[in-house]
Length: 482
Image 1 (cartoon, one colour):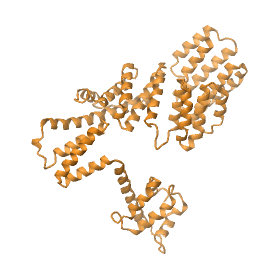
Image 2 (cartoon, rainbow, N blue to C red):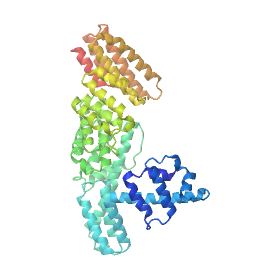
Image 3 (spheres, rainbow, N blue to C red):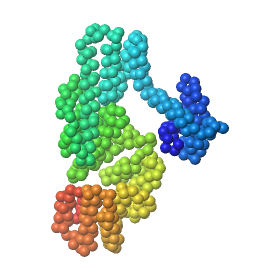
């Protein structure tokens, strides 16, 4: 039964839900089959993992039907019925979490049963709830259209008694839903084109944007305006005027969006800041940091209470690079416990190593890096590149570290050349970093780092399109030239 649908469904039931599921399974309204109840009571003993050997089909059958020969078909029927009950319970739980959806279904049922007075009252109640809702996204306009559509086409509604303005409003709600949905998904496709080099033909995008700008809601609706600017930014990421207008609108009106769309907007804006930063516009890193703080304040990076380790590390790198060292240290302490258990220890060590490096505690940073056990490629790249930066900083303090730095740089370069998982772009970015850093160290140790050489290195770095830690390298050249 290990890979069965029943096991998967039970694993999706939270511990605190089990007692309510038991009541559901035992309710005569939903189930009168005692064998289904016996199956559930037996299996719940092995929550939450349901991995015990005692859950083999033969053992389970013997518990449900003692003194009977094993019958696979009979067991499957009971399992199917229990699956059906669990799925119904999951739907009921969702409706409890979404009272408006529950009311929508009740509204539809009242209409279909021709309880017209109750239907109209519920229609008005739901319309008022939507008017008071903070959200003004595609789902909001779809819900408004659905209510007005159902009322307009109800058999007992006098359609020709409805005013022209009301009919126009129904169409406007439908248009708003379509246009916002089109703009939202177009933004996702354009983002994928920018990040993954995919090619997508987005039919009717230009026309949709034209219609959106002409929509009666556009002038006052910030959601429409935000999506319009977002699409413009996707097409022209270097348009700083659009970026700043969008940044201001998103920061001030993020509450108009639901959490999934809030996270999406911040992800797009963070990606744009990365693109602009990589073009040498280093001031955009501070904007990226502000977006991360905004997302944290809305809990947008957490999923089931867990913060992905990649996001955790990206936030720390951004914070330490912009000089927010106290904030970065506090962040590690506050959010370290929210990391996935398997990654927690290594991610906290790596995050702390970044903070120590930024604080100038290079030996402490290296000790933390040596304690990390992960062999994940993303971790290894971070560990080895940060370790090399620590070695370089120690060399700047003490020339005797040159041999260690040289050895580590060559070892890192061999690692890069031998790793077949790296894309050509990433390989080039890391390899250029190692070569450039080694060149600086070699010139310094041989007393050849003249002002002319430094200026030439600065010019070379400025023209280098693909290299990691570019801002840090620029700062090191500045320090050496002081």
